[in-house]
Amino acid sequence: MTYTTPEQLDNAYTTLHKTFKTGKTKSLAWRKWQLKQVFWMVADNEEAIAKALNTDLHRHEFEAYYVDIEGVKKDILDTLTHVEEWAADDIPDAGFLFGTLGSARIRKEPLGVALILGTWNFPIIVTLCPLVAAISAGCCAMIKPAETSAACQDLMAALIPKYLDQEAIRVVTGGAKEATMILERRFDHIFYTGSVRVARIVAAAAAKHLTPTVLELGGQAPCIVTPSADIDTAAKRIVFSKYLNNGQICLAANHVFVDPSIHDKFVERAIYWLGQYLKDGGAEDAVRIINEQNYDRLVGLLEKTDGKIVYGGKTDREDKYIQQTLITNVTMQDPLLSSELFGPLLPIMALPYREACTITQRGDHPLGVYIFSTSQHEIEYIIKNTLSGGVTINDIMLHAAVPNLPFGGVGNSGMGAYHGKYGFDSFTHLRSIVTIPPYFEYLLSFRYPPYKSSNISK
Ligand code: NAD
Image (cartoon, rainbow, N blue to C red; front, side, top):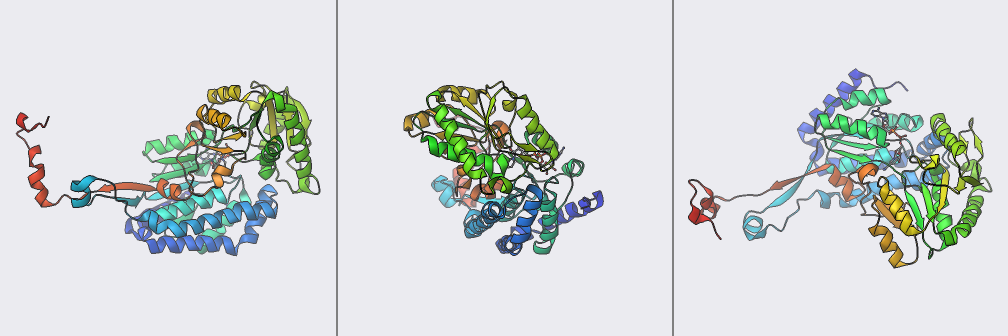
């Protein structure tokens, strides 16, 4: 696909700004119509979406249907059900004077023309779900899918003009060069999903125009397995996050801290479960590493580790295949823990949960903390002594799939949140409105100069 030219970008940008000024996208009828169109765009093209995901990532159709396709459709249906209620004025508790007599209220104004920059690991979801939020809030949107997942980018660039209102929603394509050109322009909101490195570039560009941003990033999400944990379930669920999308998930387990008393049993069960997942075609069906650059990065880390590979380790550059790999005897100084792994390698460290919390607090706040424990005391200790975007207890990543929970990071794992109403809110300006009737003059006249000390009520 040829990327968007500066002339095409100018045309799209001008059109979106013109459209927003007309107020067309503020109407609830327009929002609902466009939400339904996104739904039909996905529903009509499920096969094509699954095929594009397979081309880019070697994703099995089961994963494509239950994560990507169902994920977007569910998000749209939920938004359609609630959008009127979210968009209605909120009535604050402003007291009798300003609340009842002044009818104070909060109007939900769309921020304007939003830029949505997607990434490649779930290229459909991380591009279309922010779009759903933008439409629900009444914004115009320019979308730039990740160029790395080229088949999904091309599909979205082909489908969106067919289904969605071209005056208000435009797709542009390109890599870093085109993204730089886009970011020179002034947007009213930027919603970015991707790496911390690029997030800094995006935030710096946004700062020039004082544009608010939501940054959905990643980090080194730890699993903390305490002595009271159900060891088998913990191992089964943790290693699943290294199978799904081959661990290329912002929320996947980055590493495991497991209590020394149960370390060996945990490793044994983790080996068992990976063996189960990879047999009977499981290895063939696993998602591949997105490109050679990431493949080389991960294999390089595996070559440099001082840890012991206890399972996996098979690699094939031509196929971009890296087997799910468990590494024990790892320390925090190991190259494997130098940054977010974002792949199928899982370092395991024997460490009591209190020390695991201290180490976690020393680093950047992760997107998720996963606690495996049956003791409420241990669970509370870990929650109190760490900070992360979210927490799932006795499972992995699921806090991001629960309706009405905000999804987002804190510190280096991101800023702002979305999903459901939180997505609507992130594209919305809360505009305070109050009416001051003329007869309030009697109550307010004390404020005018010349001031009198006798007017101070003590
Ligand atoms: P990336 O940050 O390199 O790319 C994402 C987007 O940024 C693409 O659209 C790309 O074109 C654009 N981009 C790349 N270089 C740019 C530049 N110089 N200027 C402006 N834009 C540029 O993506 P990545 O690093 O491969 O993504 C992986 C990261 O994304 C991981 O850290 C992962 O944790 C994170 N992630 C987060 C979420 C979430 O929802 N929090 C979801 C998926 C991935």
